[in-house]
Amino acid sequence: SLLELASLMKEWGGTPEHTWKFAVWDYEEWQGSGSAEGGGMGSLHFVENLPEGVEIATYVNLDMYGLNWPVETQAASQLSGCDEDYYHLYLFTSPVDDWSYYTDRGLNVTNGMTENASELQFRLSSVMYNDLSYPMEWVRVIDDTKGNSDHYNFIMHGWPATWFRGMHEFIQETGDTCEQSPKHAPTDRVDVLYQLSGGRSGLEAGMQTGLDALALLMWSDVQGQW
Image (cartoon, rainbow, N blue to C red):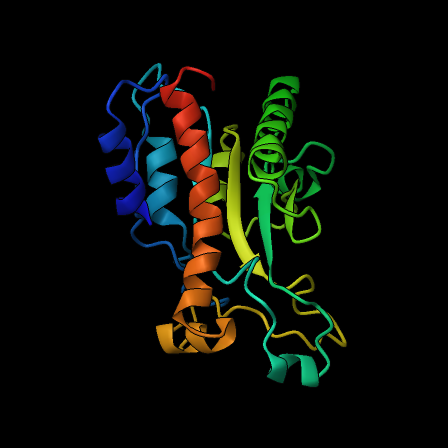
């Protein structure tokens, strides 16, 4: 996905309003709940070592998307009790209303951070619902209240960020019968993802949902409309 997006921007030519960096982080995964090593080291190193005067307009995390709308819930899952027609695409974004997850971890939220979060959620919603006409029921821009991926480090350092995440609505809740997309587990394999999405074409359609949205954000920046 990153290489495709970078190639697309190169094909467009021109100079975007902002500098775009396409990155794959090293040492991101948590080493287990009992480990002192932790995780998120690659993205943390990045945000802690920005050159003087450099600011981040937006960070977009593409971790674990693809198994999302318009991928349909397969028959086997429906027969086992899953009543969701599709997987969702969630854009877990810098909070506008609920900062509690981050304030509990020491973040001092400023008015500027809330304003930036509001602007980012508005921009994402405009692309998703106005430009692309994605259904709000299945593609949702919401406050991030759980961290749980590398966008966390950006938000904790005061930068607006969003996480494109494909999943069913409820995750690890009592009585949940909808299986979740395998996240960094031995089952996180292409063949399993194909099975859950109804084949390669289904998974590619889900990935295209996110790629189209991000491409529009990139294009608006190239056009000086960010």
